[in-house]
Amino acid sequence: MKILLLKDPKSGDAASDPYVKELSSHGFQTTLIPVLSFTFVSLEHLSDKLTHPENYAGLIFTSPRAVEAVKLCLENNKEAWEYSLKEKWNCKSIYVVGKGTAALVDDLGLSSEGEASGNAEKLGDLICSKQISYSAPILFPCGSLKREVLPKKLQEKNVPLESITVYQTAQHPDIRSSLTDYFTKEGIPASIVFFSPSGVKFCLHLIQELSNDRVNQIKFASIGPTTSEAMVAGGLAVSCTAQNPTAQDLAEGLKRCLTP
Image (cartoon, rainbow, N blue to C red; front, side, top):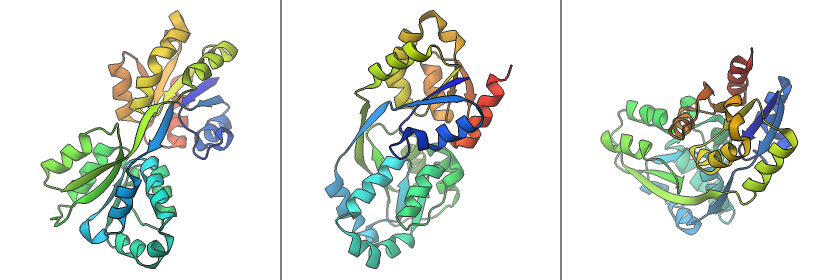
């Protein structure tokens, strides 16, 4: 069965992407097409904040791109990071969503919690459940298309948050040609998997256009509830939502919904 994944490869190489490897191991013919492009912004501003951990109660990362922005900032400040800053940040609360983000945070030398939360809303519940009285805000590097669920939830519980936009998300410049090429050569896939609300926004109309009256043959799947909500809002029937945002959970969900 053919599966189309609408996501960026984890390390720049589609063949080594964990989702491609996992689904292929279950016998799926898997193709990955990048749908988003990212531009980092305000890195000088972020770098300045990272050098003053005393001003913050911790960090929140809800995407791998936000961690990458921090990594870029540290390239010009490696000595200070290793000598003192890393230890100072590690004395604070570092919150993450998802295994991929957690792994990148770990690469920075930081210990984190919340990996299994699955989405920003659940991470917000975790943070609020601690009932900590914060004397300083939590620093939240984020993207230009971030949802307001997490900031709103923390505000309601009087958890101070300082957001800084560190990357902008746009439609990948090759998405139309890549999707057209796929549908021309491979035909209609058994399933198409969305990995973000942005992916739904940028790809849905193209997929409907290319699949024409055969769109109902496709089982649409998502990596999590937030993406599923965007799919439903776009008029799609969601056949599968991964129980957790992992390759293994997605594979299990697809096997269930694609088995006759």
